[in-house]
Length: 310
Image 1 (tube, rainbow, N blue to C red):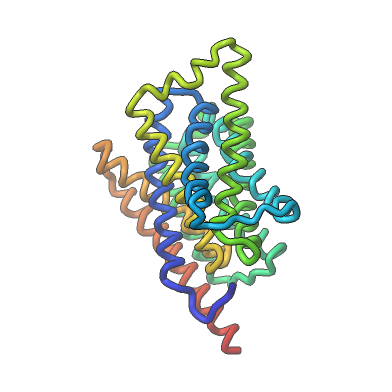
Image 2 (image 1 turned 90 degrees about the vertical axis):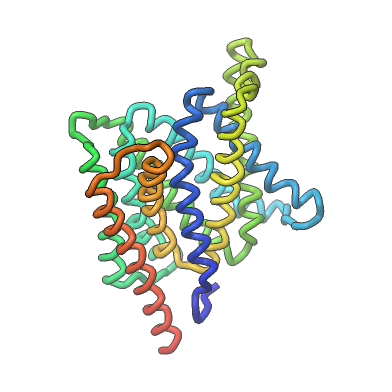
């Protein structure tokens, strides 16, 4: 996996993933007006799985299906999307988005620790400092936006911590499996597992209520369909494929710090699309986050080059 020089395409994939995730927040917010959480997750995963399935059916892509392969990928599919999306749904029912963003910003540090233990990835002191700088930018933005102690919720915070941990574990597992499976194969199984589980949950709720037609009724709304297409095709299938490719070229500790860029994208998307106000601290926070991401990856490249030359 390690090459003398990380291709620019890997950084572009990581950047594209952050941009898509940043805009995803807006679409998720819109979807809440039309349907329930499990129904929406089912719709999203259905679109994502169809995107992954079509090239396979057309014979353009081959995906391994040996029992041993499925067993190796199973932990990844449990962590993401099952644990990740489930905890996200329940946490955001009681936890303000400001606190959730601060907790999510801790993922890079957790990822560094996990990558060092399970992948034997080496992170320099300078990289850790830049990761902390990027985290500081997110925390600064959220505090300036008005995160308050009064809004603290123990249950929501613990669930969001599990959500953050699942994302860190997902990043490490993707990196670990990237040498054995293609990014497409990993994406295929991630979307397949999510589609099956969340569809069963969504349908199950309506079966128990005796209203199976209610599961499909929201799809009559054109705005919801557009939202579902974006969240499924780009927000799930696209980001999984991009992450799989990027992690086959970039260490977990360097890849995960890109996730903080999504906060910047979300803020500026709100300014441009929803006409939300832009304040001075948005600019300052964005600069801090970008500096942290750039510094982490630049020092990572220098460290990697020096090890190969040594």
